Length: 80
Image (tube, rainbow, N blue to C red):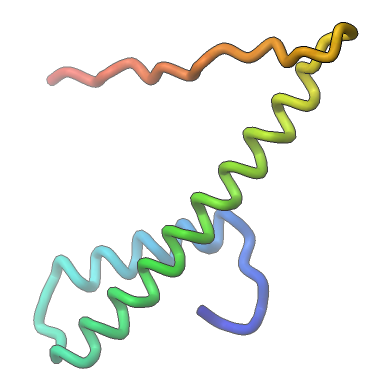
């Protein structure tokens, strides 16, 4: 990853591009490993950013009693 701190959106876009390049194939082993390593770093960064956002949301929802009113997020499965 570059020295510049990426936003979540920039990191996610770069991760999507990295995955596409790896799926398309045609890369040397060295380039594939380089992109894979970068992808792992991007996944870690995105995961950390999502965890921070979740904690901020819990803080916003904190009730007067000091308990967080949180509800687990359940994503509806898409069916074809």
